[in-house]
Image 1 (cartoon, rainbow, N blue to C red):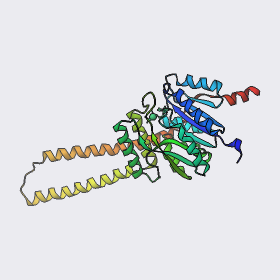
Image 2: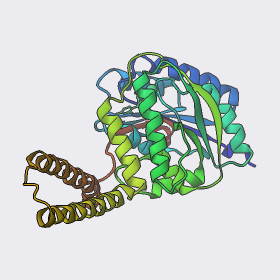
Image 3: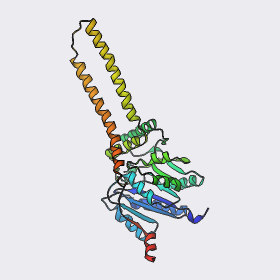
Image 4: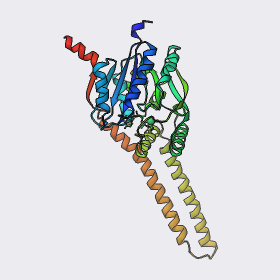
Length: 321
Ligand code: UDP
Ligand code: MG
């Protein structure tokens, strides 16, 4: 293998991470210097409104390993990763959170596995420290539901902290769906995969950039991109309900013909009405989720828009011309 060709691209999506980014840079540098092979740090600024961008821009001024992709607004974590993958040029691409919840010190272990021949090395959390009970329970529930609903083997309790081979990255870049659930897509692509385990640390500074709304969007994207079982469930529920309706009809007719119990069932009527109406709305909602996504795909807008990229190497190259 040609030593010079081995390069690592580290993708760091960041959204208002000014409190932590200095430390993230320092720890990544330390780890990657120990690896002692060429690498690039690709900071993707996902529309931060704080000083995150200025800080990494400054790094890129003196450190030609630092590259910056500045998105035109906040597109979300998954899209920021996607932008990073499009720009990454390494033979292996590593995605890591900016908040140091994913320890950079695990990267050498991932690289080791990659050198053993694995094409995807994902980091599996054995523990999640300092996260609320709600986050832990909802995350665990989400990964398990997702697993039951989809046919793709998406590993439990893994986030986007992972190393992927150039081949996998190229395939990722060919997928142009808009509502992206990156870890699902990586599993869908396949190749030889393995895990390294770690304990997820507390976020070092700042607070989670994943409010409930973004968490819900991520889980809906995950489920709807990889399964249409919810639509099937709607059909089954419909069949079940009409069946029970039919049986109830028989009972009512029987009562009318053979007993003299008078019609007293206002309460049961209203309850059934409310229940069924709620059900119908829910099923419509499920369909809406899918139709909305079809609509997004049909519009075929670009997945993200870049304001500018900073790449010292490219600048030097164009200076020479
Ligand atoms: N992030 C992003 N865009 C967003 C939200 C988050 O690029 O709209 C980044 C964020 O800066 C961090 C990573 O995605 O590097 C994970 O976010 P966070 O740590 O807030 O999520 P949590 O760990 O709480 O799930
Ligand atoms: Mg975090």
